[in-house]
Image 1 (cartoon, rainbow, N blue to C red):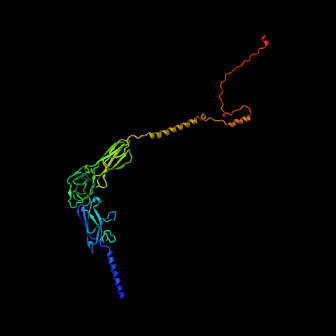
Image 2: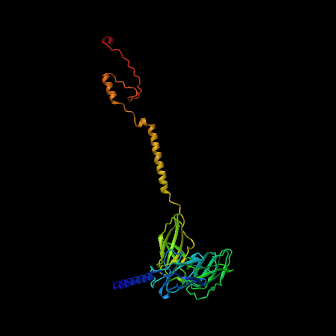
Image 3: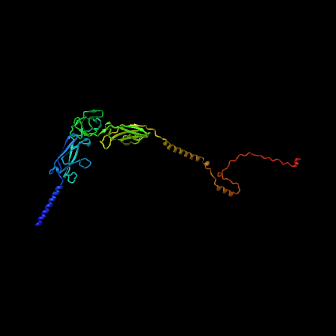
Length: 397
């Protein structure tokens, strides 16, 4: 009986431990009642209800953007809402989808006890408008934003991005041109991030964006010193104390484009100069990596020098000399063939001479025609000899 009681007690403890273990490792329930609301044209708040059977202090919540390239959560927090800035031009869309899920532990790093993910799609208050070639340039007075309007008219509103409690300001310094419309914003564009909304006059569509800090390209000065180029720039007055890096691209003598980088050192940048070539320079500027990014596009082309006629001496030598040598060789061959009998006369075979001498003995050796050289007979004047009779003593008497 005692054995049965002990066995029952042991079995009951084991069962209760297993039940508690299963309850502890079971994933938490998913969130319910996901909803969103726009706080202003740039900011949206997503919220949800507390899952059933849980207390706020017992769980954490994670969320991520669905079209993100990674599966990493954008945030992990104990409260049941999050706030995000949505810019239509950054996302190139007027809607985004988020996944939200629960972590059933008090640590965000615990991935073993997570609920299923629930998706929510956030739509902008108004459809996205199509605006082409938006460009915002900063200067000491503020920012000049312009765009290609097409056949549409837009109103521009703005505020500092990090100051969500500030009211939107409407730009009142609008201007229009033949190809571009724009507006001047009186803001501290160097230190503040500006969020801008362009909305159709009818209010039917809008776009939102945060412009990059762009300036007009600093003017490039090119001079020649000691056979080298000296390159220098004059940055804007309101950014003189900012460290800059300059990129210079140039073309010369119909060669491919070459680009070089020059950091700010207080001295002009130098590069080799080929006086035979015409150069075309263009440059752009960008701040160093350890300060806020400010950049410019490429400025106007700066020409320098003229193209000189190429030195064709080597080409002429490479063509003319082989032609002359070839002509000389051909002429030499022709002359050799024509005067071969003089240059290389026929030499008789000595064996024929000895053979004839052996056969004919002391007889006059007759040279085979054409085998020995026959001298030309010299002219001889005829000589007539007359014999006179010999005188005898009888004749003398």
